[in-house]
Length: 507
Ligand code: HEM
Image 1 (cartoon, rainbow, N blue to C red):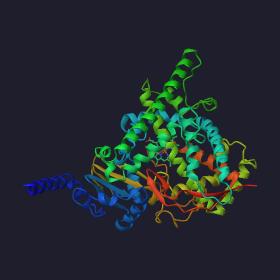
Image 2: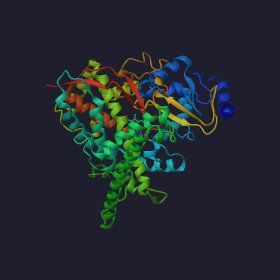
Image 3: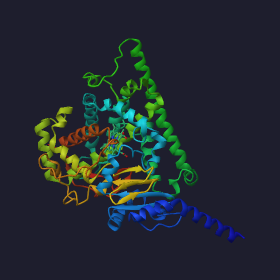
């Protein structure tokens, strides 16, 4: 009796699984998109979901070797495509309608809600237009002062370990400095993460951006219905951390709103206008102030609207930039000729005093450093993959991607494709020198994505990377110490062995 029941249930499950996947399987087969062995019901889940963040990049690379520039995966009923094919990049990033993010982004939703990164449609479009003000170059000037100050603190924090022989995991230092920058730039408050890494908001943010991406690569935690049962303590911790984060952001927003309201009442309030040269000079001008002043279709944003955007800036603006800066320092330490050339440029443009402040114009004049950052983002893109979800079939060349499928554009491997970058694994900033640029096809190099949903904070990020790298290099010579990178991915590119360099004070 029991056996009959089990057999009947199994047959029902197999039939259901076959029926829900049939159309997508047929489309993939007719497009000759293949991939690793997929079992009924489970798909490739057993193979892929025990890998962990440490092994996923290598595993994806092996699948590209085996199945070509595009391969498919099944995780239970989810169909996923991984691609490094530029035709797919062009079609997907260039599209003005294919804006919905891949299924894996659902792990961001509990703390980012429907902010710019995750929103689509009218809401995204009108906000994206309105927020462009916040990244105007006059506004960016103000943030450079914050970047310079926080980089100066980082340089001092590094001093005890800068003995020429200790390997230092740069991400630990850079990440706290980047948090100081983005918290002050986004919210106008100083949390002093570098002096107080245990500040509750900082601890909660760090914990959430660790737990959520880790979950997506574990079978027992990936599904929302299973997570509270499989890891109840972690689940509670996640909820508590999100509560701490939201509580802090809410409080800051309320306080800033009442400051603006007081300014309106006493007549000192002046609405924002694009190109307003004074904006950058106003002390304490934060992205939050701009969001408070923005109105969309005549209506101001509510506190909840603002919170999802501030949280999005905090998430997007911290880990990405720290990954970029740390990888750049790692690569510079291992290429002495590159380091020497940057240092000469720093002396030339910024002068011999390592503490003299930088400005936006000075940072923009660091042209060779610009190439070094570009080459770093080619080999080590902070966002190693970008995902979209298809609502209906899309046809790209000979291939059709089925509806209801998440497609991941794997920047990490596209940027290392010898078809687009000769000698792809060598670190050669000269590739990006003006006049000597290799013929990069559009979409072959997209560390900040491209098309309508590209990175709105791109200019901010490049200025911050330049401010931090230049500050470190003016004070220290970097040495190739410590373990090599072991790339791992949990949304952002990191390394399980640390991002190590040695530092020796410059005389
Ligand atoms: C090295 C640093 C950075 C890198 C590599 C980077 C990369 C990216 C990429 C690849 C996307 C597209 C993601 C996707 O479609 O899934 C993106 C979107 C975004 N980034 Fe960045 N980012 C960086 C820094 C920043 C900073 C500093 C901010 C804010 C201050 C920021 C704000 C955003 C926002 C709000 C979006 C969503 C834009 C939209 O969908 O309209 N990013 N970023």
